[in-house]
Image (cartoon, rainbow, N blue to C red):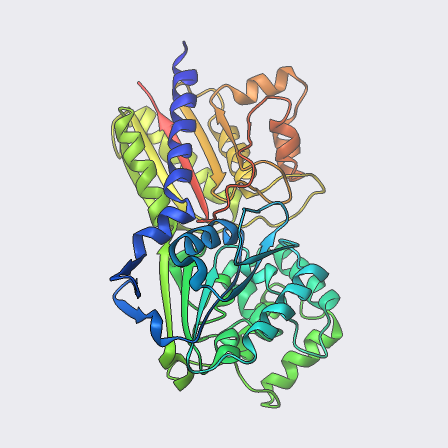
Amino acid sequence: MSLEMTLRRKALKIFKATLAAAEPGNAIRRHLRLAGGDVLVAGRRRYRLNNFRRILVVGAGKAGAAMGVAVERLLGRRITAGWINVKYGHLADLKRIKLHECGHPVPDEAGLEGAAQIARLLEDAGADDLVICLISGGASALLPSPAPPVTLAEKQETTRLLLASGASIHEVNAVRKHISQMKGGQLARLAHPATVLSLLLSDVIGDDLDVIGSGPTAPDKSTFQDAAAVLEKYGIWEKVPAAVREFIARGLKGGLPETPKPGDALFDRVQNLIVGSNALAVQAAAAEARRLGLAPMVLSTRIEGETREIARMHAAIAREVVETGRPRRAPVCLISGGETTVTLRGHGLGGRNQEFVLAAAIDLAGVPGVVVLSGGTDGTDGPTDAAGAIADGFTIDRARRLGLNAARMLAENDSYHFFEPLGDLIKTGPTNTNLMDVRLLLVGR
């Protein structure tokens, strides 16, 4: 067996280990338990369940089904009712909580209907109710509740423009929160005066509470001014629908209330608890690499920026290992986490992970003993059915023999159709979790 084939198998095992660590049920069980029969322990806080009239479970996100299963298994019939918006196909068998399928990454009418159902469930919540909110990656799109007069179609168009512009998730959410009725702490405002416990699977750089799922139960640090600045920065202020511009402009003039900020009394009864993050997935990758005989080297869990440039940086580090043994001698596994962005220039099919691997493969062409893998922990890379892709130093040569032009297909953002005939797409199906991306570069001896 060639060195490249051995490294490929190890890379796939490492990625599989990250998915196991990111499983939402495991994440919740690490932070949530019952003590003494009726005391719910969540992190460092304790909730005496007999003191509550009702327990309501709401939420949104691609991991919503798996999170709901874990909470149902723990609380069972104590749950009065529940509703979680999930991505199409991300389902599980639940008895007390309703799972409602919606559109992602662009919100749709089903998401609008689901958000309205959650609002109805919470509108009569009282001080003697406990609301458990389950938020994971994708919640921003899966919990659409546009602020009138902005319509869902206008919010959809704004989301499409933001996703295509190269804006970071922090920037996208700053805009979405300010044309929404639930994001940016407004779901907590809706549930007030109930006690709110939010369990969060973070899919954002830095695990900022006000950015995860657009922070529906967290104080919001962003402002109407920030939202306007994002649209100006990426040159789409004049492209977004007029109703969105007018709504944000009205907010800039003080004609609309801001999202609730840190220090607001409504958050006195709210606990936001992060139960999983990208660091968890990266730690699992490092442990599995070590088990497989590779020295793990975590570069960062906070990688963001333009995908192609990040890929070139990673490839340069791998070449340095091959040529000089710096920063560490082979066999080594370079690991990074986070989430990059793709500025769409072409009309092909792909996602940031596939594009990362294609760009890295071009820079690593002809380099022996190197394998690169990048995958989304949610099992979906962009608008494709692949989680990511895998390549080695001979991938570009193999592609050339099939008549595939790597540089041209990268320029067209067509990484999916590059890797598909090579058999190098990674397809996991929906994983029911989302802790951003994991990137691996394995250098063997």
